[in-house]
Length: 116
Image 1 (cartoon, helix red, strand yellow):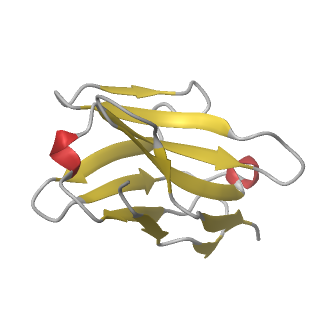
Image 2 (spheres, helix red, strand yellow):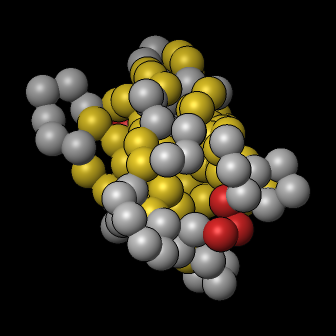
């Protein structure tokens, strides 16, 4: 099973930006899809965005126009560029990899805190 390691979280003021990274232990181009999820304190984990093997991207309405998912196949790394951050974006962000066959893999998460 692929190993995923998120990084790039931290404390940022409202309106600020952060870029999250997810380093994979194997070729991410081979996956059916990769995604970002998040879990805010006291809430269930929610889907944020997905990028499919062909490059098509989809976003949750709550982040559309502010967040951008991308990948670097050569570096086996998935990214999440987050702009115009809001306090309600505060959460632990998780990377997810969905293979064509088998069970999806999860990273351990990286904490993003949006606060003044």
